[in-house]
Length: 255
Image (cartoon, rainbow, N blue to C red; front, side, top):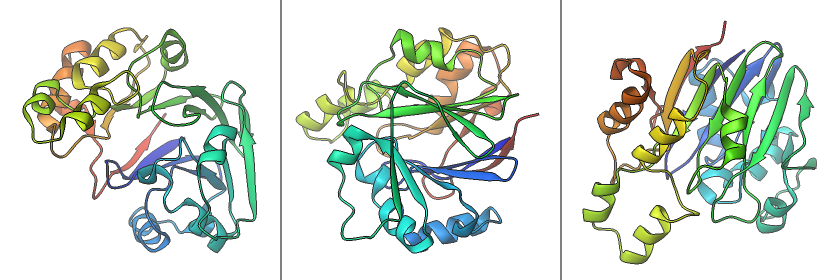
């Protein structure tokens, strides 16, 4: 199994997960042309996808999903709440499959395990992916951890973990007060210290890859995110990768 990011941040998110001959796009916050360009950097095309999974309806995660699905006849999978909150924008999608936030599903060679998270969306979920041997946990867009989140992510071989903001940078920055409250609130985004505390609650004995993701370009830095997570693992900060808004990150293999 392997995974890569097309881009991560407030201007668009998309993650690619591959097992065997199955490739699934998790979120699609970019338009079809941009997705094609970013897939091309990874040696793939949209025709290689087995479908699209959507975590929630916010535009940086879902803006391009329906157009991409309509153009390439892809199935979109999402929760009922997300489906009720999202608009296809006139695109004629071949298929929308509603998923249960507590029930696993199979897409080709991938086992997909959704789980609910606290975020200011209708029915947001995040995912654990498995090929039967390895587990990849993906977690972003939540205001705080829960025991269920920690149970789902414990023992993963790889983690893509939100480190959205540094609390001091957000507090001192130029965002309006209502936006600061939303980001730092119970249904907002994890700051570096909250992400580190969540990581400390997990079994990381199998961890091969840790990627800090969804970093705010105004309220965080890669160095601060790395330092917070490295302090938990007792590793060098350079071992922790950071998902970039423009380039995401290249393929990571699980062996």
